[in-house]
Length: 358
View 1 (cartoon, rainbow, N blue to C red):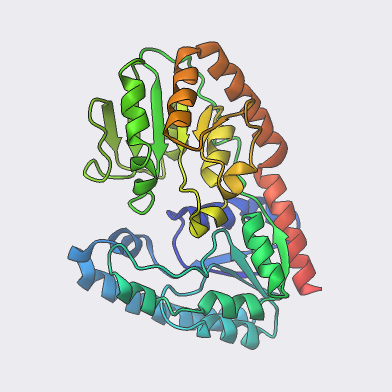
View 2 (view 1 turned 90 degrees about the vertical axis):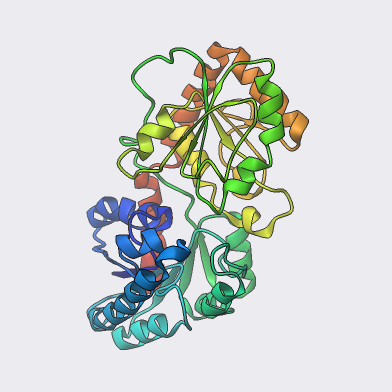
């Protein structure tokens, strides 16, 4: 298989939907070569307007590399596209790769990328450059689409293309509970990006209210302090690191997964964060939106909250009862081992690829 990804391994979509499944896919007799469009350096500067010159050079270089990938496609039994082969322009590379290889196209959609939006960095220009309608074209041309959530499955199936549900999967030997017992003030944590920081800001009033009665430290990983600030709450803000990702999840006593109700993008997300919390044995509070409403067992592996009062109640309950946190975390770990391992994810992905090739 030739797999064309938009982003490098430092992006969660490429890391968990492709790279993390490679060993198990190879064991199943499927050899996948992953070719990201962006390199790590260009991806790092992509959303920094001060580095637009370097980013432009990186994009031109990346586009040139795709020419070589078209040659590689001639030796492939299938072309797998994770979201899109290039982050701008029409789906020409995807169509040409499948045509030159005379092989089926497999599209992987972890999120509902057919929904257009204005870039927080480049505004409406970013939406135009992304080429509206690209995802719809790829869905219609794909032999099968592997989907990260039921919402994506329903959308793809309605367009007449075969859809396979492949929920998030993590390496449970890497994402695992910490070996030491929690000590000191409980850590309530959240890991995300500049684009999801508004989700955390939405529950800031609940966090501030709980902090007046229950001591805790809020740890924010990935978003800058200027993006998330909760007055009256003891807060750590640290940069995200690939090398430290699993450790940062496991270091939490309680996880946060707020999502906006009524938001079409949030409703189609694959809820990877839920799986990472579960695998690390971290009890968490989540908005029951999209896949986040389906993954785990509410009340046993995590709690759900739909409004500020619900968030205050759920957080207060977990902060007050260390034994309940421990029991809920253990249940979450068992759930991850039963439903979200890389072995399971690779088996589902392999079934979809074999169907496309057949």
